[in-house]
Amino acid sequence: MLKSIIKISCLSTIFIATVPAFADDYYHFETCKEKVTEIEQKITYEKQQQKQYKVEQLEKKLSYIKTKCQDTELQKGYQLKVNHKQVKVTERTKELKQAQQDGKTTKIREKEAKLHEAQTELKAAQDALESFKKNVNSN
Image (cartoon, rainbow, N blue to C red):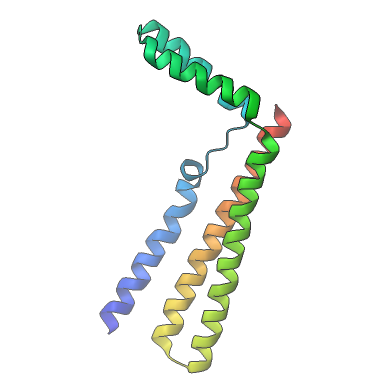
C-alpha cells in the first residue's frame, strides 16, 4: 500500500514537472499568417527537391488556408481547451472534497495529485491561449 502511494506521488511529480516543458510542443501557436509562411517555405523546399506531387499538395493546402483560415476560429479552439481544462479542475476539486469527507488518506493524496495535474494542464492551456493572442496581435 505504501509502495503504491510512493509510486503515485513520484509519477505525479514527474508528470507535473514535465507538463510546462512540453506545453510549447503540445500547443502550436501558429496564426493564419504563420501557417501561410510555413507552407510557402515548404513549397520552396519541395521545388528545390523537384517533388512536384508534394508541391501540388502544399499549394492546395496553401490555397485552402488563404481562403478559409481565420485567427478568430483558431482562438476559439484555444478557448475551448481552456474551458475543458477548467471543467476538469472543477471535477477534480469535487473528487478531492469527497475523498476528504471520506477521510481516506490514500484517496486524498491521489485526488490531490490529480487536482494538481488538472491545474497544471489548465495553466498550460491558458498560457497557450495568451501566447496565441500575442502572436495574433504582433502580426
